[in-house]
Each structure stands twice: as structure tokens, then as C-alpha cells.
Image (tube, rainbow, N blue to C red; front, side, top):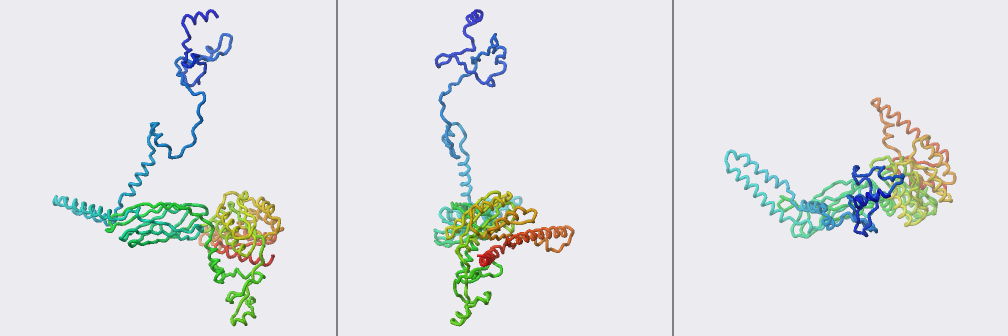
Length: 546
């Protein structure tokens, strides 16, 4: 248009157009409107031509243009948490404060710790300080007392062995047992020619209960010393021991040097393995297995001859071999064992009902301990043992096999099985088991039962499972519920608790009676008797039905 050309020629180039160094072409990119003040933005009417056509907006001359690489590099990969301290200084950032904190803690550990005897010497200076008003000479006496105490403390500190010269090691079982005291030993080696007095403190996992946190030890010159404590894990799984902290006392007992020995080590917590060791000892001695309850002979149940041994008072008189007795001149019993190569499948309910605690362990922990002991006995008898843990879904499954390798696999599976807060899906779990095992099997289920209505799904599913399998349902009694149901009430609240507890126990017994009517064998015992009672019932049912 002529008018527009003349106006442009009179004023020169539009100030909104600017040349660039890259080819002298005006930039036509449209920046984000949010980067420019509103008063400098052209209105919508000015951005449109006379014919209503929308023209491309030109870059304002005052807008800063930053040169960018047309092919930007990809972002760098992830860096370590420590970062590059040199890069931090190059970027003008403050240095990483973590090394400073570590150095401060190291200096703090190197600082001497005063003993009560040193504090008592310093406290003596309070007597002349209190008499300063009587005579100014008492102030000098107080200064001399404090100075002498500090000088003697420095001498005692320099005579104290350096913690880095002392060797401290930890000794513990590679497999720890849940819920029982596992012995842990701390050994200290004194390389110096003088006796040392030390205080040791081990760093144990948070879920471990120990009988003592710190222990004092006195070791002679160039000799070893040892202290022991018991660690009681509350959960299964993999944990870690930490460093060992120690304090070495000076010969004058005025100050202590403190230090730390790196002793990080894994702590693998398994089900109760100590009970298996007791069972092995009882077998080697030819005694009955005893877990604190009524003595029950595990070897000897069955019809296959195993060995001859001396008669004990708890033996059945019918097991006496009169021929062997006449030949040896003393009563001899015949010991039988059950038939081998039966298929045993252990089912563990890991749902919400098994999360309640009995003592320091959950119901699932007690069931896992019993399952491990039962699998050991069954594999020792030559049976094929399998395992399945389930809740809302199947969480662990190991098909039935024999041998020591199978026992080790079951031990690892039991160690990893944790309780959940979900409802158990019995129908899906038992359907999965039926799809895996076509043969008839001896199924041992560890679960909890409330009443017929609340456990309707369990009763229906386990009845169907018992159609072609021998099923034993093992339950754990609640001692608090039993106590509330049998306690003599003294108040109205106690009477109400007794009535409610009695109703809960009656509903539970009614549900168990329904299971027995439908061909399911049951066991309802306290937690401390679960292992022995389960093994007894396993041997009894195996002798009767296989």
C-alpha cells in the first residue's frame, strides 16, 4: 500500500524489527507473552490486519535474544549422592557439609570422657572457692587444685591405650532364630603390655531385644577377653549389625578414650532353628523329644521296624520284645517307624487373622516355627514335603520334594513369608493347590477360626479340599481369651468380659465341630504346645490313613 510504504520510508525501519548477527535476518519467533510487561504488548486489534487477517508477531527490539544451540546435548546421567565437591566450588555453591559433620564427630569421639573420680577432684575446688570471702588465698588454692587435677587427667589420658590399637570382633550364628535368645560374643584383644579396662557397646538392629546394652571387661596384658549377650529378634528377615563402640579407661581411672570399631555384618533371622537342634540331640541320645510339655516319643510311631533299644518307663508295654529281653537280661523295646514317601503339603495363612500377637510373636511366627519343625521331621521320615503361603494371593509355593535340599528351600521360603493385613482368599488358594497336586496328599493348614459365620469361606473351601485329601487344621488358642472366660468376676465390667469371652469360645468350638463333621481333623492348642502337638497328630494320622 502506498501510504504504508511512505510512512515506513519516512521513519526508516520499524523499531520492532532488529537485525541479528546470524545472517542479518530479523527474528520472527514469537516469545511467550508472559515474559513481557502487559503495557508493551500490542492489542488484539493491532495484531490484526485491515482485512481481519492475523499477522505473525515480530520480536520487539527491547526483548533480549539469547543464542541457543539448535542441537542441545542430552541431560547428564544421575550422579552419586556425594556429588563432585570440585564442581560445587566451580559453580559457586557452598561445600558439602557432610564431611565437616563427619570430621566434627570424629573430633568429638577423640575428646576424653571424664570419669567420676576426676569430677570429684574438681569438685574439691568448690571448698576453697566458698572461702574466698574469708581470705583471698583460697582462690589460689582452688586454682591449684583444678590445675593439678587437669594435669593428672592429661597424664592418665596419655597413658590410656588408643582404641585403634585394640582389636574387637563379633561372633554370632550365621542363622539367628526368631523369638529366642541367640548368643552373641564380643572378643577384645589387648596387644599392650599393661592391663586395660574397657566398656563395649554393640550396635544391634532395632527389632532385636538384648539382655544388656553395655558390658565392662578387664583384659590382661597381651591376652584376650570376651563378653556375651543374648539377642532376641522379633521379626524374620535380613538385618544388619552395626559398629562396636568402646571406651578404654585410664590406669588412674580419671578419663576414658572412646572409639568405634567397624563391624558391619548381616543378621539373617530364620524361624526357630534351636528347636530343631534340640530334636537332633534327643534323637542321638535315644530320648523322647521334649519341648517343655508332656514327653512324647516321636520315633516309634508306625509299623516298619527301625531298631531295638532299652525300655524306658514312658514306653508302651506292648512294645517290649520278650525274645530280646531274655537274650540281654534287661527289658528291650522294639521301635517302629511310619511308612515313607508320603506327600505332605503345609499351608500357611498369612492374612489379617494371623497378625495378632501371642506373647512377643505373631500367630504366623508361631505357625512358621512349627512348620519348619514339622518339615524337618517329615523329611527325616522320608516324606515329600511342600509348602504354600497365601493371603489374598499365593505368596509362596514350593512343590513337594524329599531331601536336605528341599529342607533348605523351605527354610528360605519360611524366612521370607510375612504377615499381611489383607483378608485371605481360601477358595483361590485351595484351587491353586488342587491345580498343582493331583495326587492325594496330607494337607496341614495353619490358620485362625472365629466362628461359623465369620469363617464361612474357610469352612466351605476346606470341606471341598478334604474331599480327596487328608486335611489337618491347626489353630492357636488365645491365652487372654481363655483367662477372661474362666476368671471369677469381681465387677460388672469383669462379668461382661467373661460372658463375651465365653460366647466367643463357644462359637469357635462350634465351628471346629462342623469341620470335624465334614471330615477335617483339627487341633486347637496354646502356642507353646503347637510344635509338639502338631508332630504328634501328624504321626498319628499318618499311621492311621497311609
